[in-house]
Length: 277
Image (cartoon, rainbow, N blue to C red; front, side, top):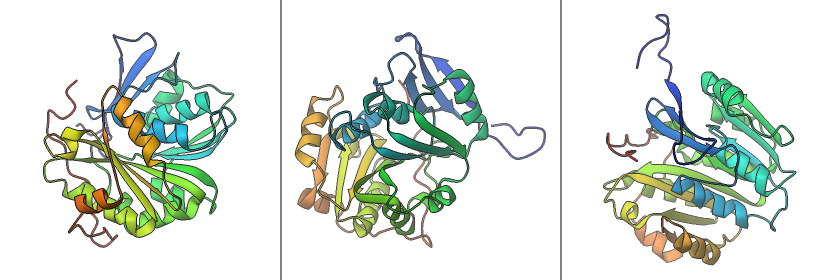
């Protein structure tokens, strides 16, 4: 990674055309795939973890009903486009700290301007602190610096602010990367459980066993989550996943301690071949 003009090191942002789907693009930051979008079909979700969050969006409210969503980590706005396409009239706000990325997406991957979607540049945690309490039905936490989630977005203090912003019955959906011993995702699950009454974990079986590095989707809410419906969708997905909740999730996280601001660390770096496609 090279410095620009002798100043701070800036992430390398790249767009690659998807050879298999017309009008589809892959966004990479420092060589790590961050987003996939189909401009002609925004309801198409290519990444498996994104489809898991898509299932949550589908079940968040009656079909087609608008929702209020906040996206921490804008990327190419894959999920924001999905919400706009499947739930017209939704009010959405997104933030990313990479000004070059946001400018590139605005220019090369424009979204439907009829959508009530505003995208800003800034620090996700500071931006979240400025949101009104009980102002969102969904908060998507998908912030990565390269391939790692910054420590400040992994703590009980951070998720408490997410909970503050969520309206009653709202859902926090966090993308967590981990592998091997799974210490990070176990700690993240118990961290959410300190803040939310109901927590669910979704991941591919091989990832859950630590056989390969991958993405976990963690859900938190003050209301019961639709575990049965999420499980059915996860089983029908082209990349089948398992859904852990209740006692099963408690056994998975046994011995893990919640993360505090004072002890928080960036998520683990993935192996070099983790994103080979």
